[in-house]
Image 1 (cartoon, rainbow over the protein chains, first blue to last red):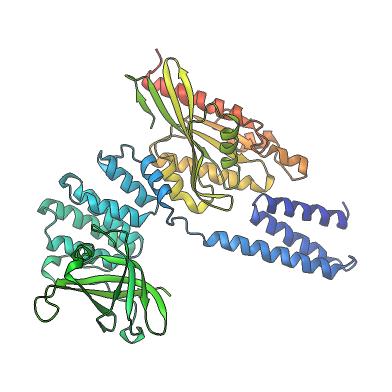
Image 2: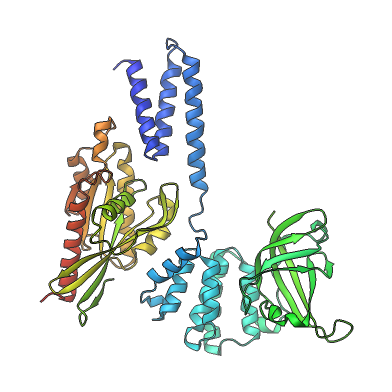
Length: 305
Length: 204
């Protein structure tokens, strides 16, 4: 086989590999062709061929990089989530016989963390399922790198005395191991006696613009899933406060202290930005002109863009 | 794990198409979906794909009708083949009753086949299953590409490298044309049902 035939054969192979989605193999062949062309000065239109090959190599590399960047565990649509839950709701020993818990655990394992947490939160109400549900909720938060939030949530449960002493021991041992595995520093002893732990904010007070309003989807309660927009009544750095009129009590029932709110939109007079917030307080106002209304405070813990 | 209801004479089992990325697992299911319409019980579902790459899994439910007095239903799944989706493969394998290993005949994919077969072995082991004992069929896919001028491994070589120790049924195939797909599926179902019969004695 002469050089020309070899170049042609390799190029055809590269094109076929590319058409079959075998991008690494295609790239290797394009590079081999480029090497052959470079090694000979006698090829007609050599520079033109090399330019075309450079384009092919660049395009193939870009496609490969794009594939590498895909997150293997990302949120899929609601129908797909229902399907995962349905398909994997078989008798799972880890789920201790509960089909509902099995489905929620399957969602968590497939990386559908928000949906899994939503389902698992519901199961906290059932004595027999509470422990497993709580363990899986903590696992979901830690998997998403929200170790600190998991600690604050665990503290909330301890303060509420959600678990009897024997279960507290079990879950603490589990949580310790989980946090050690994730390399998160933590102190879980006597948490219920400590002041409420709030997840640290990634943003400095001075970096946050004056915010005039926020928009987010209600994370739970009777109006769960509804998108609401609230005006900011007071702001101190990363803490924003909103007044919710008494007639909107349903709304405050949907936002519990300690909840993490993702995908928040912050409106400032000069820009719109996105982030996450931690509900730090939600109280009824008991004096003054706003008496009977509610004061909701959110700590901004992350700015995404 | 198969669901066997002897009272209602119903069997539901799970067959997983395993193999390296781009070896043609989804194409196998697509062909089955198209060709065996009478057996197909529902639509083929592909959960989360990027272009033509499976990131989660494909699912196709089929019914084999009455076999020895039992109504047999089979859930066909594919796994994502790329190495980085190991965790997803473990999830999809959960409860598996039989496996079709789809190997890529292209010479450049030789190592990928071996890595994927090793991965199958490890994942089964984690679930307490033995690759030598589970119903398993090998398919040497993309035989048609030889005619397009791409270097394809001889069947003997593939048999030697992948099936020397396993000694399971193997089939040359071209999932895009459908050649060998039916044979592979039939053999896998036969082995799976025989294994379930041995375990549960459902056919008297």
